[in-house]
Image 1: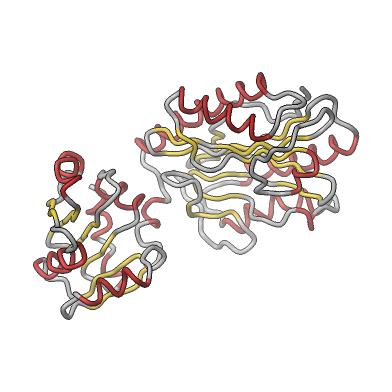
Image 2: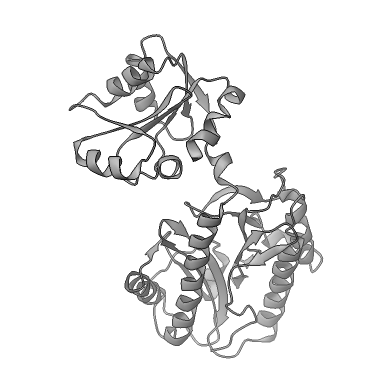
Length: 353
């Protein structure tokens, strides 16, 4: 089980137990999907502390974990008491997840147990997906392809960005998905906003529209971006689009096991820089995707992480020009032993509606 895999890593963090409170990490290690609870991962055993609302659910979902139900107002005390019973002396916690208030609450009842900050300990396990995870992501991506088909049949001049985003949200709900982030619909000059969430702006004929969207299916998410033109594109729109497309294709071709995120980013970025638009591509090429829409590893100018088979990563270069607009194209790829498999079938050529 996954908790066994993590236990083998405890020594590397200088701890003999790990407190896991982040929702996605709880789900990953235990299978428990309730909204409240904490895991204790130790060599002596695995504990899930939760409240009365989730006792039965936890027993059904968290196979291999002892479920402990805490009393009213006794969550922190219960967690630390269970840690003591397991013989923990140095308890790791998720430094990026715990608030100062939560930390002081644990510390107040630690009873001699040292609390040790760790960063990304569970997330490092999550970067490589197993076959079951990959199948869930593939299903999410297949649904996302269908959603893009729906977008092409829905978008029209005079429609607001928010209207389109709402139509997409409704489609996801009807088809067993839930949005994993606020849908980005950025038309015309708003396309210069990399994260231009849908607004009241009306989309007009002759405008490029960047649409970035994704949805959860069985807790795993997709993430796709396409840029389309309402009507015929002009010469500059085509030029910018073709540069971004060439960069995106280069990024997919460069995404290979054994390279670093920095090396992959460079292969795509040079395609934009060589055309004189480097200053308008200011973010990383991509990021991991799984239980969260933004995970490790990263394709960026600084990332030294080595790419491994089983990683699922976005490839999403863009050009964003203030006062003019922008273009972004994004696919998800799964790294294999030989290459990178694109998980979408949606076309990437410039679609003129």
